[in-house]
Length: 501
Image (cartoon, rainbow, N blue to C red):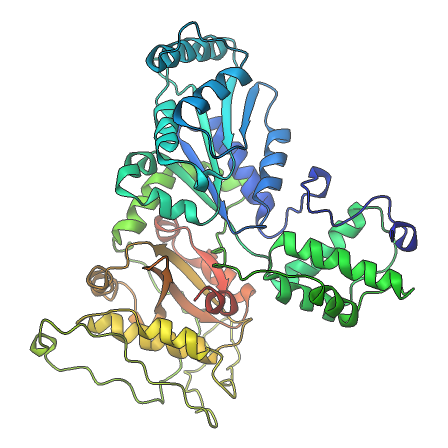
């Protein structure tokens, strides 16, 4: 209805995937390049996860278009397939008719067919959408398919696309063999406010718009907040905002039209924010071969190699002025049956205490940030952090207190560097990690964020506190190479961390 009004050739914010509108910002382009590299040069299962509406299907469609001509793609969009049905679905896509009904013989015939294709220089990749909803027995069949190989090469490349629940499914003991075969893992993160503004301009230009920016900065910010950075929700709100502007006969979208669009939309709560995951550009894609090793290291919470502090960009932590929870001088004196939780004092509701900060580091001075006039962590978020059972883990308790202070004081646009996250929420294990880590780095630079997911805690480990993404990115690049190889580090905003709790 509004195409002529804004001089558009086609609708700019359709929610159906249209590869001409693929946005390569927010690490999408780098993720695509890394996927292409991994599929063509690697042997193993690849996992791509992201929240509902984060752009997984769009990425999958673009990936299918940009794979080399010698790669045959099989797109499986029905997650409810049984273990035998997925086998016959693949055969149908390859134009193969099995001579007998027995599954073991069918697998052998499929293997022989794949060997013939490989001898002709062709490769086969299976893209499985909504993998988190697949029956467990079907996922086990996927694992068996990944075993099909010639004398020297894998014959099938498999990519699993799914919601964050896919991680929980793969964490089951019965699927540990499948999880061990995943060599590369990518996560589609939500767009930041700045990226949402760029995204809106990109989609308008891709649809043929050539005038000045239609969405004001305030309107873009409002859309970003209401959509939680999810591209599908952004498209819905942007489309309705344009319709509201058209009905008012104006050519710019302001917060007034966005508010109308928000009232007309009924978004359910986001179960959990997509965890940001920085994917290196294709120049660094060769490092993907170490992906499996990186995963194992992160899950085992092994200490990182010794490295010098990047003091030129790290903001020294604020001196705590709030009373800390007393810790027994002798942790062993606590009665064994008692399970302690992180009894973290509530942030002061009155005038904030000034932050004490050491002189700005050289050569990149960072201005001292004043504390927020009120805690930015909600009471419910504070309760969730405090409910994490720490037992007698003294170091962990100390770092959670510091994390609580960080999340209560720092604004949304402040940044930290995520080192890793783990589904193993055992406090004693994290305590051992911190005990080793303090021999390598000051513990004052480490923060631990417990997030309750499906009745289990996921621990996110952060490094440093920075005024903006640029400063965090500089610090990340200056980390020693061995440290960067050990963990897939990524700058993450304090606002995103708070929303994930």
